[in-house]
Image (cartoon, rainbow, N blue to C red):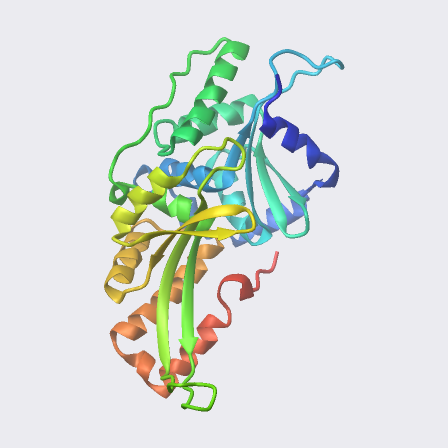
Length: 315
């Protein structure tokens, strides 16, 4: 029986196209040498967190197709095209395994489908996942290739270590985190405004997850509750067009400082790293009260105007 992931994969084949080797080589030239170093063996935890946020595994049925083709599983990461450099870096860390596709305008996919790449991926994130649904998906993959290739890879167990001990949260944030800067302009009291509004600048770190995973219908509540405890913030729930969403929001300067310290210890690697570094600049300006000056406020406006979706990335 074919999995839902496999069926979804086939739905996108016709609209996906390979990203040229020329573009990939150009991106490689821009990658900082420091990004290619696995500091303190943190890459596996980072990749595990990223996989739990942006990845899925597609399992075909065992055996050959009617055309006698042998089908392998696929490990697929889906992201915005601005993160192509990130996934080229990941491909380098995975000994050049995997390939790239672009589909649906700004969407890219990093796909690992060869058996050696799959084995390396399993070895890299083994025993480093934190959500039961993704760990079960990995174990289904392990069971599949063990049977198909007569291997004896042990099943993965959940990582229960403290979030502060490794870079798993960095990878998870790379997938679904957001660093926001809010600027409020002063407005006087008027007929339509009962109170005057003062100038203000605030920071927010936000992390959202669907309450229920779309593919396997598993709840994300437990992992988000654990992260809320780690960040010392409230876990809230809101509704959007796709259903219930779990949301973490860190806003107080003291707690923002905790977030800053974590990501300086376990750095982000993708486009989000640039957003974090800009966010950190604003944080330091607020600590030193420079955001209260006209010059500081102007600088923060300029920083905000180039963050997140406004950031221009040349490929």
